[in-house]
Length: 302
Image 1: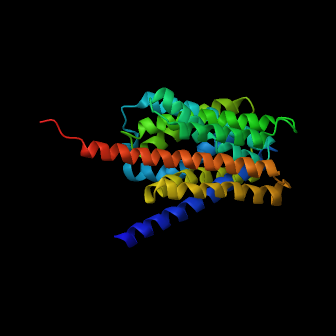
Image 2: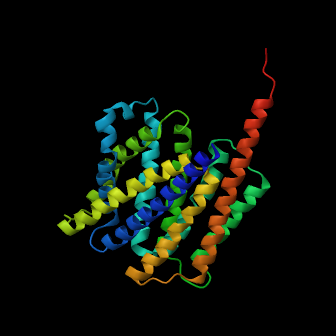
Image 3: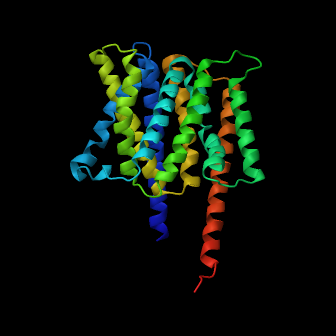
């Protein structure tokens, strides 16, 4: 039994590593393509070609994945997701890859705050301090004292904050909806929403553009699916630390293809942000176990 658990965890770690590579490939491709197409148009094709990945679900199950009683929540989630995506894609076009990867780690910090407001979750002083420390890390990355504030930094933080709203909605949907249903609605609703934004900046892509756009769509959707599967294979506290590899890949790709060299502030700030989010995830796990034990040990009313 222990061997099976270990194998499952190792599989989860492997899937997570592949997911970080695919996310980084997508980010680099977006940055490259932004020199010829507007980021909003790239976002549209990212969603459109994402259909290639989820098409087998519909071939196998028909319209079964679309059965839901939460259509309004799916629409709300997709709306916020599109805003986050458009902001993130634009930030990739004007900011260094490593900086964007670092600041994107702040999403769980925003989600923790929103969970208190909308889900009535209670957080203790330790998690409050972790959130504050995480935002200090973001300030270190931005470095407003010794350098001018990059609009890309602001857009990345906007994307992270809006994405955190989507995370809260996903958390609510996850109580009754399957991951297949959640992903299917996300892609199908985001195609027309991102298409509206792309319409105002439309340029007909070349064959070469389409190749990269297909890579973006397939790599992005595949990475999300692998991430979800990785978290099913192993505990979040074991799997998520490997998410930091996205920064490593971003630094390498940024240096090799875009001649970007991250500053010491980027490294220091990103480590602080990441450790803060990992601590928050750890505390949530500990508290979740305590609640389960409490519920088990409580006497049942006769």
